[in-house]
Each structure stands twice: as C-alpha cells, then as structure tokens.
Length: 329
DNA sequence: TTCCCGGCCG
DNA sequence: CGGCCGGGAA
Image 1 (tube, chains in turn yellow, red, blue):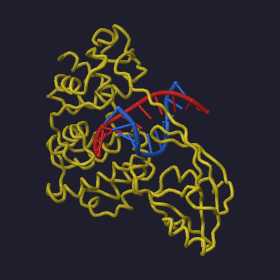
Image 2: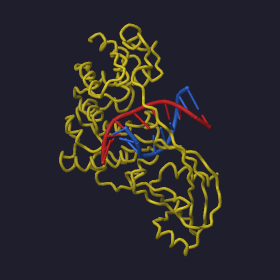
Image 3: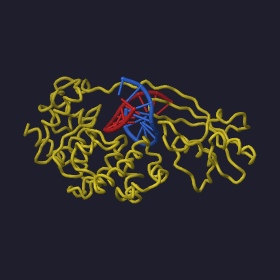
Image 4: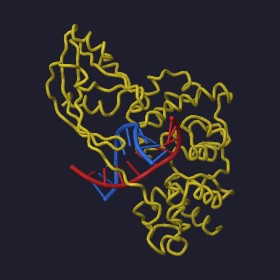
C-alpha cells in the first residue's frame, strides 16, 4: 500500500497539474470559498472551460459568501450563463445564505456539515474539507472511481465499496496531494481509453492490466432522443426582444426565446437552423423572426413573454443564445 | 457529424 | 434511477 501511495505521489510531482489556480490557495480554510466555487464549477464541466470564461470572473463579482448571499438571482445566473446545470449556482446562493445565518459567514469545515448544504454531496464535501481546509478526507468522483476500480481490480463495485477503498488507500500524511494526484491520474492517464504506458502503476502494480482495463467500471450507455423545436425571435419597433422565463427544472430561472407554436398564429419568417443538445436530447432548432406592433405585443405579454432591450438582456440559455447569433450573420 | 463526459437531487 | 447542460474529442 505504501509503495502504491509513493508511486502515485512521485508521478504527481512530475506530471500533475500543480499550477491550477485552486491548488495553490491557503489550506487553512481562509480560502475555502475559492476552493468551493472551483469544485461546484468542476462538477460537470471541463477544467479548460471553467478556467476560460467562468472561474475568475465569478470570484471577481462574488468574492465571498456575503456578496453571493445578497446578490439578485438574475446577477447570479448571469454570472453562470453558458456554464450549464444552473441549479448548481442557485444551490450555491442558498448555501451562501445558510452560511451567513448559521456558520458565521464561513463554510463549515467538517465533511458532515458540508454535506448538509444544498448542492454539496459526498464528493464535494470531501473535496472542500481536504482542498479548502487541509483535512485528511477521502472521497471519489468518477475519475478517482475509475482509477481505484482498475488499480484494485473491482469490475463493478458499489458506491460503498469505492468509498471504503478510497479511505483505505488515503495517504493521511499527504492527503491533499494524494487526492489531487488521483484526480489527475483519472483525468489524464487512466481515462476510459487509458494510456497505461504512462501510468505510475504500470505494469505490475495495477490489477486491471492483467486483463483489460476497459472492462472496469463501464459507464451506462445513454439513449439519445432527437427533438425538433421552432424558436421565434419576436421584436418590438424599438428593438426589444421577447423572452420567456423558464420555471420548470430545465433552465430554471433562465430565459429562452419563446417557441413559435406557443405564440398563436403570428406571422413569422424563417431565419435558419442550428443543432444543440442537453442531457439526452439532440435538438434541431429552427429559428423564425417576427416583427410586432405594440398592439400584438400586449397579447404576447399576456402569454408570459417579457421584452428586453438588446443591451440589457436577462440570463439566457445557450440554446437561445445560438438562435440570436443567427441574426448577426 | 456523432459520441462521450460528469455530481447532485427527488 | 432518470433528469439536468454544453463543449470538445473521436
């Protein structure tokens, strides 16, 4: 076990992504918020994308829990616009409010208390405790899970088994580097199509290499469904554009262009089409435009359409952003 | 162009 | 266990 841990740390020392911003904060809890923000963003999003447009701008606008807790929902969603899974940031604001009320304006440091907060599950609670507070916690996201499955030779483990494995394998003397190393190994080398030659456990220490690493911890296959939709860009004489606020779970709180068939029989002109996708849906979106007079706009307002000037738009889902881009071409 | 990737919640 | 998002790799 000790030998495996040492191999891992040695590899991380040479090849780990040690320059990532959130790996170089203080580990005494004083920058736990910055770590927390990174972990939430990284939950379903690639490192490169988080870094490119979102992480630092979000911290600049909401530098601490207090600022996040008092912001308007619209400001919060705008800062997250385009990143997807918008309930993540709505939960972050709920968490910020709870922390202001119950934890003296700070994130709690224990895994248990962290996990009570909205949007924080087993993985994120462990990661924030370890990476933000320097605690010796073990946890597993799907990268770590894949690494452990292969290393210890468990083809189809239950969550409980993986958690026990992570705990047993944890290097309590270097938990920060140990966990970051596992994350990097899973993201860079031990991928679904692994580069075993480059792995610190190759060729003798990894159980899976004796058979076939691809047989371990296979993802469930997603059945995609195709969906055709028709969006309509309705504009007023003054140039304002009509949107509808989403109230369901999909795009909750964001605005989208209205669907053409929700507008009744209005005159609309075909503009173009594009492809988009979310969850299991592959969407072909046809886009129409319609210029309204003020009388017609009253009717649309009664259907829940809200008009915004193009220089002061609400938070808009990428689906509708793509449609609006067609007008610029 | 198609396929793949991911943590939390109800 | 199915729903949630979008980009980028293949």
